[in-house]
Amino acid sequence: MDKNAKIYVAGHRGLVGSAILKNLQVRGFSNFVVRTHQELDLIKQQAVFDFFEAEKPAYVFLAAAHVGGIIANSTYRGQFIYDNLQIQNNVIHASYLNDVKKLLFLGSTCIYPGDAPQPMPENCLLTSPLEYTNEPYALAKIAGIKICESYNLQYGTNYIAVMPTNLYGPNDNFDLEKSHVLPALLRKVYLAKSLMTDDWEAIRNDLNALPIEGVSGKDSQEAIEGKLQKYGILKTGVEIWGSGKPMREFLWSEEMADASVFVMEKVDFKDLKPASKEIRNTHINIGTGEEISIAELANIIAQTVGYQGKFVFNTDKPDGTMRKLTDVTKLHELGWKHQIGIRQGVEMLYRWYCERLK
Image (cartoon, rainbow, N blue to C red; front, side, top):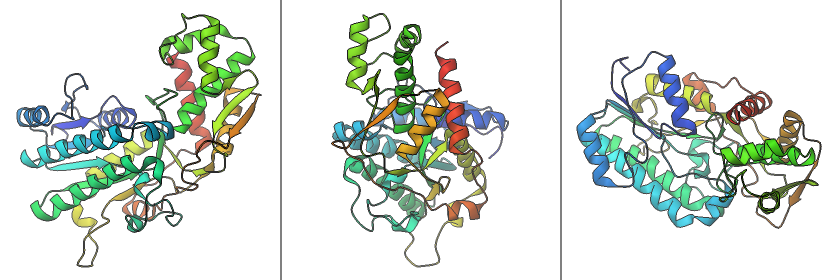
């Protein structure tokens, strides 16, 4: 990519988009075009088309999406599939209409079947049913892969789809209803520790920064305790959905950003086409190839935060897929490998979260 080329980062305020923007800036890129959700609603087709026609970006990072953890995926199934299909269809087609040189579409490893082989290679896509709880989101992301692949084959575009594993890092979503497991668990443990030590200043600061269902640090102690209890945050322990046995893979978001920029600069669609007549599964897994159980993750977070309470695993709640480990062979062969392990990453995220509360 030319350092002066115009780059559009869709979702630049989110976990991945903000990290991509930062990575590009460090590398010397400076000609960015960005819009907040209030300035440009990517679900509205005409607004997206007008934006692309006016700005004519040369490169596009499509990191905007409607995302969430197991609770959100189970609750907002219709919204998740509709919003994500609209966002990616509008941005990808507008990129084609306006001669974007290259586009990077970010999906998710939840695209793979619930009984996928472990680790999950790219070619196991669509080989058996999806895991039910996040099926709508996964279907949208699979459609995004196929749009990129199909446009490349029909129109000669250069659109690359990457499938990151579970991400965490700066600007993560710590909303207890909608966030993914790692940031949600870190916040729950932090609040539980504060409850155990009667550190109400810390609790009120936390809720002032991010109210829980409208309850902030300005509300009564009784109201706050009631809301924390709803999310399994008690003086006696922290409730975790499921058995704690599911294995998960986690990648620091700034490393995902580095991998994304690496792919944008170094990898083209022609490098990903298989030798067979049927061209499919040209997407790239982005991950660590390392996994940890939810119970082990909880213990690492507890050690990092200094929490000495207990965890209660609610087995009446769903576990989700038991394993979701990515096969990162293709990524390693292309020349990129992660550096930050889970323990170091949790420590980094906790420092970032505490700084946010000051």
